[in-house]
Structures are given as structure tokens and as C-alpha cells.
Length: 232
Image (cartoon, rainbow, N blue to C red; front, side, top):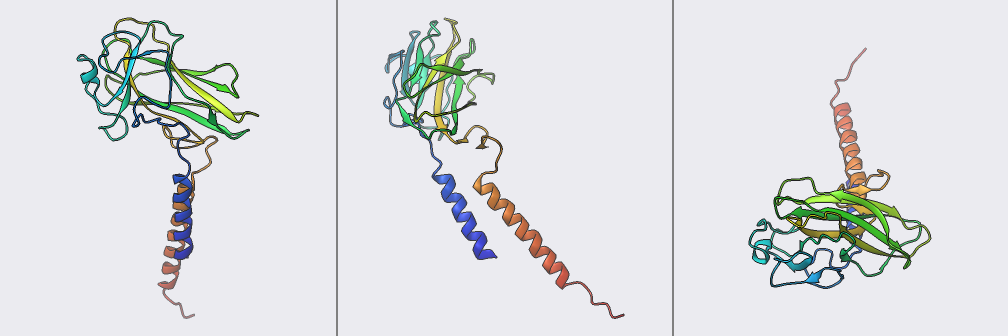
């Protein structure tokens, strides 16, 4: 029994490892590459509205921004944004991403407000097979200043085999409206609320369930073996 459980666990771990993020440079560790933006790239300073940079220190980019680490390691890169009043501008745009037809996908990102007033309101959009961008959801950052919050949406590809993803900021305020984005994600399982669409357990979850059943079975066998013999 142990041999089979070990095999199941190995298969579960391999399946999870292969589930990966389809967004290239979604964690921004490669720098200012793998995406485009309607905002102006301003790596030296974040003082102006409608600019962005990729970096590891919000306060180095703008002295009044919250001092936080990135969402992943705490010391890596993130997308730093001084929000524009024009809510039609795209903050972040992916390239075309190959997807499977008829598949459900999660489109997610982590966001943190960097200034006490006017936190960001991210709009998630997608375009299938080069078509027009369609809005999926507009999600507000509601946590306290400098705290990463995972925002999650999902969609089905229908007959499409490529998708392009967009993030916009629906917060029009000129003052404040400063934020960071990290770990932009596309995949068939959620990284914000781990698990697939529809609530089917992950492979590792199945493995733990099987392990649990094996442990219960072993306990029952041991208990049965230790039962006193009754002589009638």
C-alpha cells in the first residue's frame, strides 16, 4: 500500500509543478519586458501621474510611497504605478498567449496600495483570438496600506486558442492613486484561492485524502489485530 501511495504523491506533485503560469514575466523579475503599457515608463522617478516602473523599492521610486517588499520573496521586483486620471489607459498588457479551446482559466494579480488615499480599482479585461477587449471584472483593493491583496477572475475560452490580457485602473483620483502589482497570473488553477474552477480537488488534495484513508484503514487493521479473542 505504501508503494502505491508514494507513487500517487509523486504524480500529484509533478502535476502541480506542470500547472504553471502562462503569463511571461508575471512576477516582473525579468524587469521591464514581456508586457506593454499605455503609461509612460519612468524608472528614475514616480512623482508624475500616469507613469510606471519595475523595481524592488517603492520608496526609492517615490519618497512618500509605502515601504513594502514584492509579493513573492519580499526582495524581488514589482510593477510600481502612479495612477493616471484617465481610466481608459491600460496599466499592463500581455502579448498573445496560447490557450486551449473550451477551457476555463483564472486571470489573477496581486495588488497593494502605496499611498493612504484613493486606493486602486483594477479592471481585468481579455481579448480572444485578437478580438476586442472585454471586461471581466472591476475589483477594488480594500486592505490596509501596503498589504498585498489577491484579486481573481475567470473566463472560458470558447473556441479561441489565443488570449490577450489587460489591466486598467478605474480609480480616477489625481491625489493618491498609487499602487504596486505583482504575480500577474493565467492558469487553470487559482493562486489566490488555490483550486480549480468548479471545486474539483487538486491532485495533491486527492493524494492527502488517499493517505488519510490509508491511515484509517491501517488503524482499523491494527485495532482488529489487537481485539481480544472470545472463547464461547
